[in-house]
Every structure is written in structure tokens, then in C-alpha cells.
Length: 369
Image 1 (cartoon, rainbow, N blue to C red):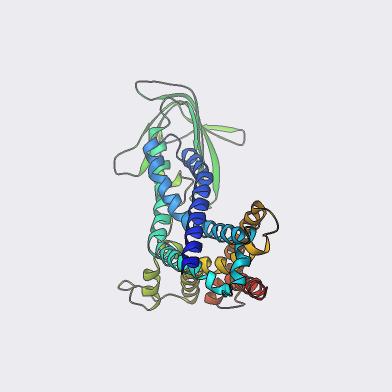
Image 2: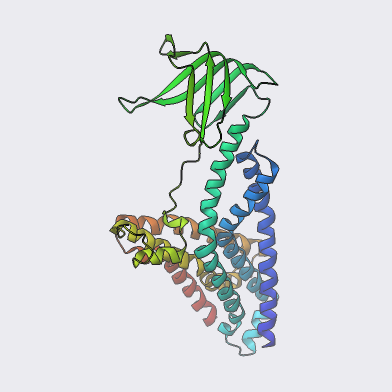
């Protein structure tokens, strides 16, 4: 028991240290990204946005920190000859894994709860938040600016009246859909002056022109209408998101829809494609949660195996394990499920199966040494 408490303490400290280190590396990048994507909106919006991104990243970054903690802990046991003393005392190597198993199970339960209930809504809210921020930025029109671009809408003017907000000597570029052909053409409007308003509740931008004309392939003619009404939804770079996409639904919502109890009145049962997408998403969340257990089995022998090298080498190897794991889990399982080679549930566990086989092989060698 004393030995296991010692290993548990070392593992928790290494896990916390690795998680803190990852946070210090990731948070500046997240903050810079938030400031860039929300420029012109306000610092308070940036602070509202950052927790949404962090919530989405925790299920991926925490297992990496756990793997680093496991490799560091067992590497230290080997480097300081404590592992040799454990083997000479006749203690079975697997008993030393019990503290890591406890931590892995607790983390797996917490991560599964996060992936199943919190993260889906946060993902959707993040996309909605970005869209609303874009609209807010557009409504403000970058106070004091005479040139700006949002989505496919571009405006350039020589000057802007500080009191009325009217733009003078304006060029506007905006994609316009032809009602007859349905094709979209980039239209360039030139006007002596324009005013822009956002009628409350309209969800649109109204542009009024003074002496406006349209330029198309060297032809120039005056436009018939002195105003242009553009839905704000057409201006954003962030497209409308379907709330029924699996990644935006909680696991309980998907299970209810699969058995039919979560369908609204008059709503048709899920087709085969949607049923498979739901099953894949559910299993993928469970597989990601179990990553802690897989990383424990893989990380312990890796730490012991690299004991003759430096601690930095062991941690570098562990980081490579983790990034390769997520690269495969994001692509391999989805591709296998997409082509129909195996069922969606099994496809979600493909990467875990590969890593588990490698980990068990290394663990077997660790026990036999």
C-alpha cells in the first residue's frame, strides 16, 4: 500500500505538472486566435469565447498530459533504480499500475461526461457565438474605418462623415445571385455616397446609394434601385450550423433519436446514414474517454524502456504517441466507417485497438523483464 500511494502521488504530481505546462503553451495561442477572430467586437467577448474553446480541447489535451505523467513517473522509477528494487522485492509489476488505473478511470468518467453532455452544446454555442460576433462587428462597421471586408462583402471609401456615418466616393464588391440562372456573380457598385442602416429585428443591412452605378465587364450603367437590402446571414464567414449534426447533440439526445423516443411529432425516423453517424459519434466519445487506459498501458513500459536515455527523450516519444493517436482517431476510423468496410461502432475503436495491441506487447515485455 505504501508503494502504491507513493506511485499515486508521483503520478498525480506529474499529471498536474504536465497539464499546467500544456495549458501555458496552449492558452496564449487560444487567446491570440480569439482576439484575431473577434477583432473589433470587444475584449469582453474574447473572454466569453475562450472558455468555449478550452472546453472543446480538454478531452484531447488532458489525456496527453496523463500520458506524459505516466511516462515521467515510470521513467523516474527506472532512472533512480526504484523499479529494480521493486522487482527484487518480489512485487508483481502490474500492482504498480493500480494507482495509474485509478486515476485513468476517474479521468475517463469525467471526460466521457464532458464529451457526452457539455462539449456538444459548447461546440454549437462556439459557432453561433462567432457568427453573432461577425454580425456585431459588421453592425459597428469598424467605427472610423473607411475600408473593411467581412465575408464576401468589401467596402472602400475615400472618407467617412464622423457625425452621420455616411461614406463618400464608395466602391462596394458583393456576390449577387441571378434570379433566372441561379448563378452567383461578383458585382461591383460605385456610388458618390452611401448610408448604411440596420433596421431593428430585420436581420438585414440596408444600403442607400447616391448616384450609384454598376460595373460589369467593362460595361457601366446606373442601377434601378437606390437601395440594397442584404441579409446579415449572407455576410458572415461562419455558415449557419445544423443543430441536428451528431457532434452538436448530447449522447442522450442521440440515443433517444435512435430508439425513436427523441423524435418530434410528425418527424420521420432516422435514415440509415444518420443512424450510422449517430452510432459512430457515440462510440467515438466512449473511445476517446478510454484513451487514458490505453495511454497507461502504453506509457508505463515506454517510460521504463527509455530509462537509459534522458527524461526529455521519453517525454518526446510520449508526445509523438499522442499526436499520432489523435491523427489516426480523427481520420482512420471515420474513413473506415465512411467506406462501409466495418460497422461505425467498430470503426470508432480502430485506433484504440491498434494502440492497445502495441501497449499490451510492450507491457508483456515489461512484466517478463
